[in-house]
Length: 341
Image (tube, rainbow, N blue to C red; front, side, top):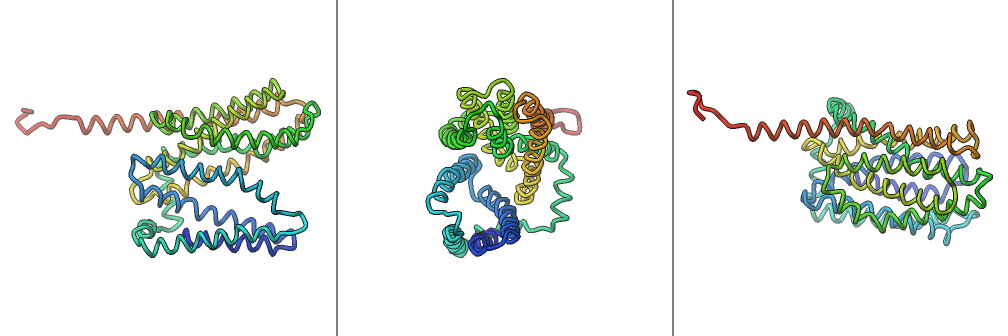
């Protein structure tokens, strides 16, 4: 599945380069999303299977750091090489994906054990749905994570609209660009210190704290929009982002039943529903209240995001109770038939 998605991505970016009509961009962009939905669960499950438990968190976070490095330099290189008059630069990532696919294929051939676990996990969509449907604890946590994703989506959707339309903010578009840069810098600077601290606790504790931090960042928008406040908003939001996305994979890895990690990593993709609903709700709030009334806009968005907290807290409480019961069963003394220990 990983090879299919990688070479599919190569064709997707070649398609972007060849697209000449708007409908073609929509089709290719949809295929781009399909490749992502195929690649991410398989790659995360592979990383989980091929690493020791003590190094798994580090590996997941190296993956997250690599993504953020790409986020920092990718747009900059795109602006440098790109042009509104040409789609040719899309051939560059197409070539990179092609080379990556070749390297991956050679590694799978050299180390057959890398692809064996993924093959053993294959199941129908119906079977996968039934498995995750029966795991009520995972489903409850998934609702909470979806609401966290709802809050996270505001940074790239509602924030730029608000900054550009608010009459009290001068040159909001440029200021939002600086927010993006600061966000990337803070992610790279704080990721590993935060993870080093957070690994002492349950991943669900990190998800709960991340939810609160993202909610607080939006609440700050309701009272101030000056440059110092915006810096505080970005730092608070980014810490929440790191707590959410650095520990989410570890949580899925811990809760997934043996042999079904690919299924669980795929199911967590349903949390991306928050990325779909979030921008829509944010846009409605701006249209309804107007960009000049942030107290209403961000009170609503912050409140909806914070609704994820009780779901995560309930999942944490239930998970803790199950762990305690399991531990007590292991520690319970055995008795022989005559009643003597």
